[in-house]
Length: 121
Image (cartoon, rainbow, N blue to C red):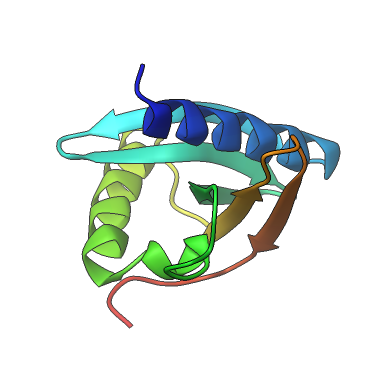
Protein backbone atom coordinates (compact mmCIF):
# COMPACT_ATOMS: atom_id res chain seq x y z
CA UNK A 1 0.00 0.00 0.00
CA UNK A 2 1.42 3.40 -0.99
CA UNK A 3 1.83 6.31 1.41
CA UNK A 4 -1.10 8.11 -0.26
CA UNK A 5 -3.29 5.01 0.11
CA UNK A 6 -2.36 4.72 3.80
CA UNK A 7 -3.18 8.40 4.34
CA UNK A 8 -6.52 7.95 2.56
CA UNK A 9 -7.42 4.85 4.57
CA UNK A 10 -6.50 6.57 7.84
CA UNK A 11 -8.69 9.52 6.87
CA UNK A 12 -11.63 7.29 5.96
CA UNK A 13 -11.30 5.42 9.26
CA UNK A 14 -11.29 8.73 11.17
CA UNK A 15 -14.29 9.96 9.17
CA UNK A 16 -16.26 6.76 9.83
CA UNK A 17 -15.57 7.02 13.59
CA UNK A 18 -16.63 10.67 13.52
CA UNK A 19 -19.88 9.84 11.73
CA UNK A 20 -20.72 6.93 14.03
CA UNK A 21 -20.02 9.12 17.07
CA UNK A 22 -22.43 11.71 15.66
CA UNK A 23 -25.22 9.15 15.29
CA UNK A 24 -24.85 8.22 11.62
CA UNK A 25 -25.38 4.62 10.53
CA UNK A 26 -22.63 3.50 8.13
CA UNK A 27 -24.16 1.45 5.30
CA UNK A 28 -21.19 1.08 2.92
CA UNK A 29 -17.53 1.98 2.63
CA UNK A 30 -15.68 2.22 -0.67
CA UNK A 31 -18.71 1.29 -2.79
CA UNK A 32 -17.64 1.20 -6.43
CA UNK A 33 -19.51 1.90 -9.64
CA UNK A 34 -17.67 2.07 -12.94
CA UNK A 35 -14.82 4.58 -12.46
CA UNK A 36 -16.29 6.14 -9.33
CA UNK A 37 -16.15 5.23 -5.68
CA UNK A 38 -18.35 6.34 -2.82
CA UNK A 39 -16.07 6.65 0.20
CA UNK A 40 -18.85 6.35 2.78
CA UNK A 41 -22.57 5.83 2.40
CA UNK A 42 -24.52 6.41 5.59
CA UNK A 43 -27.93 7.32 6.92
CA UNK A 44 -29.18 9.66 9.60
CA UNK A 45 -32.77 10.58 10.38
CA UNK A 46 -33.99 8.90 7.19
CA UNK A 47 -31.64 10.82 4.90
CA UNK A 48 -29.22 8.87 2.71
CA UNK A 49 -25.83 10.60 2.78
CA UNK A 50 -22.89 10.15 0.43
CA UNK A 51 -19.66 11.29 2.07
CA UNK A 52 -16.52 12.16 0.15
CA UNK A 53 -13.46 12.03 2.41
CA UNK A 54 -10.40 14.10 1.53
CA UNK A 55 -7.28 13.63 3.63
CA UNK A 56 -3.99 15.49 3.39
CA UNK A 57 -0.84 15.68 5.46
CA UNK A 58 -0.43 19.41 4.74
CA UNK A 59 -2.41 22.34 3.34
CA UNK A 60 0.32 23.99 1.27
CA UNK A 61 -1.78 23.63 -1.91
CA UNK A 62 -5.14 24.23 -0.20
CA UNK A 63 -7.62 22.61 2.13
CA UNK A 64 -8.52 18.99 1.32
CA UNK A 65 -12.17 19.81 0.50
CA UNK A 66 -11.02 22.20 -2.25
CA UNK A 67 -9.93 19.15 -4.27
CA UNK A 68 -13.53 18.00 -4.81
CA UNK A 69 -14.09 19.63 -8.17
CA UNK A 70 -16.94 19.38 -10.69
CA UNK A 71 -15.56 16.28 -12.46
CA UNK A 72 -15.31 14.43 -9.12
CA UNK A 73 -18.80 15.64 -8.18
CA UNK A 74 -20.20 14.17 -11.42
CA UNK A 75 -18.51 10.82 -10.76
CA UNK A 76 -19.89 10.76 -7.22
CA UNK A 77 -23.38 11.61 -8.51
CA UNK A 78 -23.22 8.79 -11.08
CA UNK A 79 -22.22 6.31 -8.38
CA UNK A 80 -24.87 7.70 -6.00
CA UNK A 81 -27.56 7.25 -8.67
CA UNK A 82 -26.44 3.65 -9.21
CA UNK A 83 -26.40 2.99 -5.46
CA UNK A 84 -29.90 4.44 -4.98
CA UNK A 85 -31.20 2.37 -7.89
CA UNK A 86 -29.63 -0.78 -6.41
CA UNK A 87 -31.46 -0.33 -3.09
CA UNK A 88 -34.65 1.27 -4.42
CA UNK A 89 -34.08 4.56 -2.58
CA UNK A 90 -36.26 7.38 -3.90
CA UNK A 91 -36.34 9.86 -1.06
CA UNK A 92 -34.02 12.39 0.56
CA UNK A 93 -30.28 12.30 0.00
CA UNK A 94 -27.36 14.67 0.25
CA UNK A 95 -23.64 14.95 -0.42
CA UNK A 96 -21.23 15.76 2.41
CA UNK A 97 -17.48 16.28 2.47
CA UNK A 98 -15.24 15.39 5.36
CA UNK A 99 -11.90 17.19 5.18
CA UNK A 100 -9.05 15.87 7.32
CA UNK A 101 -5.56 17.26 7.84
CA UNK A 102 -3.17 14.87 9.58
CA UNK A 103 -0.29 16.10 11.74
CA UNK A 104 3.06 14.30 12.10
CA UNK A 105 2.42 14.02 15.87
CA UNK A 106 -0.66 11.83 15.26
CA UNK A 107 -3.29 14.51 15.81
CA UNK A 108 -5.71 15.61 13.13
CA UNK A 109 -8.14 18.36 12.19
CA UNK A 110 -11.50 17.20 10.85
CA UNK A 111 -14.18 19.36 9.23
CA UNK A 112 -17.56 17.90 8.26
CA UNK A 113 -19.40 19.97 5.65
CA UNK A 114 -23.02 18.83 5.37
CA UNK A 115 -24.84 19.34 2.07
CA UNK A 116 -21.53 20.40 0.54
CA UNK A 117 -22.59 20.18 -3.11
CA UNK A 118 -25.24 19.06 -5.51
CA UNK A 119 -23.77 18.11 -8.88
CA UNK A 120 -25.27 19.92 -11.81
CA UNK A 121 -26.26 23.04 -9.91
